[in-house]
Length: 184
View 1 (tube, rainbow, N blue to C red):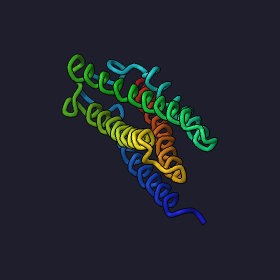
View 2 (cartoon, one colour; view 1 turned 180 degrees about the horizontal axis):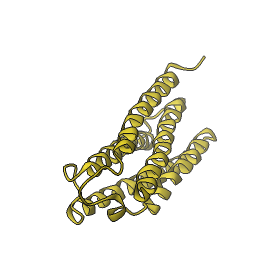
View 3 (cartoon, rainbow, N blue to C red; view 1 turned 90 degrees about the vertical axis):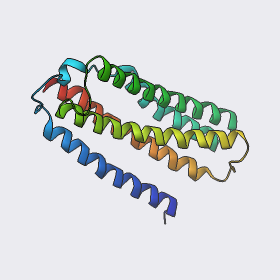
View 4 (cartoon, rainbow, N blue to C red; view 1 turned 180 degrees about the vertical axis):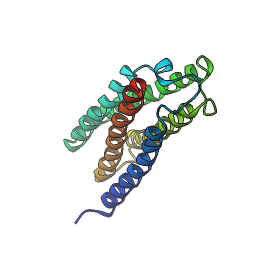
C-alpha cells in the first residue's frame, strides 16, 4: 500500500495537471485570435538554453537521489545544488524574456489575447518552478545544517516527483507556445 505522502503528491500532480490543461486549452482556443500586434511569431524565440537547463535538472535530481540512496551526502548536496542552479537559470531566463517582451515589444496582459494567454500559461508554469525551487532550497539548507534525518528519503523522492512534473509540463508548454503558436 502506498504511503499517504505518495498518494498526496500523486493527487497534487493530477490536480495541477487538470489546472494546466485548462490553461493550455484556453491558450489553444484563443491562438491566432489576436487582432492587434504583436503576434507570437514577431516576438517569441525558442528558449533553447532555458529548456535544456530545465530538462537537464530532471537528470541532476535523479543523480542526487541516487547519491542519497548510496549514502553519499556530498554528492547528494552537489547534484541537488546543481538542480537548484539549473532551475534558477530557467527562472532568470523567464524574467529576462518577460522584461524584453514588456518593455521592448510592448506585450502585456492587456495588449491582446496572445499577451493574456501567454503570461497566464507561462506564468502558471513559472510559479510552479518557484515553488519547486523553494522546496529544493529548503531541503538543501536543512540537509547542510544536519537537520534533515537520513530516514526521510521519501520527502526527497516526493519533491523529485514534483520537479519531474514541472519539467514534463514545460515540454508541453514550450511545444504549444514556442513551436505551434509561432507557426500558426
